[in-house]
Image (cartoon, rainbow, N blue to C red):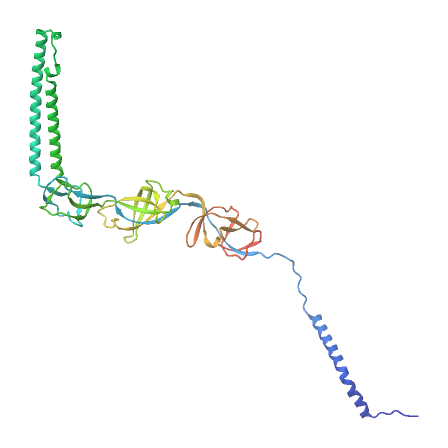
Length: 389
């Protein structure tokens, strides 16, 4: 009988050979245990209801009212009337006003110039004498008329009218009477012309004028038509203003406007006097004219050459809203409906500046205007009002 007896050293050798095969098995088992523990001790997620998220918005209270459309344009003040002063008769310039010089002012009633009246007065006296002579000739002829009428009546008694041919026009001196009357008429006309020439030899201002230039001096001999001076009326002023055709079509003759001068900070009232019915070929704008009566006693009153800002006001539009530009999204506005949902409405912009716009009122009493910006808003989404103005 054979006895299998192993020594301790042999047992250790067998164990060392089996250990490498057991390590992977132990590692896998350890990993599985750790995973189970982590999964078993992990927190469970709370269960929530699937609800829709509401959009937070800011709203603004807007009040409806009337909007008065306006338009602002610009222009330069010019004179309404100018006058070229010329000699109306021949004669020496005997008087020239001190103010009749460039930059001078002629007020109503101021005498501007006078030509030597001696020759013209002599002509007038001669024409007056001719009238007296013609009047005397007519009186004499009227006396001859009465004598001729008496002679004619005597001839009718002495002779039978059927026995001879009689020219009554010559017998009663009708041609002589017509001639005397014509001579008197000619004399009167000549006298009136002489009186008119004497009056035209001098001139007094009938308006308020500024002297633009003067071309003669006292002592010059003037022939009818010679230029004396150029005058500009300074109290009747006008402003040509260019407007787009759509704006000009709403302007009416007589419409009141305001003119603002930026240098003097002065605003005055004017009115539209004329609307030119053509477009300017270069700028395609329509010209209208405003007129203004200057106050010559006011140093800040408008003067010729002033650059002014003209403001036109038109018929008010009722039921409008003034909304901030932040509330406008591509010609639409967003509202909070009575059900606290988003609602979009199209708008018509009547006027706009850098911060706000005037629109026709499209908001119902139970709706609120949203002024905050939203990312990809859609009608019908739930909203929550978090702030208001």
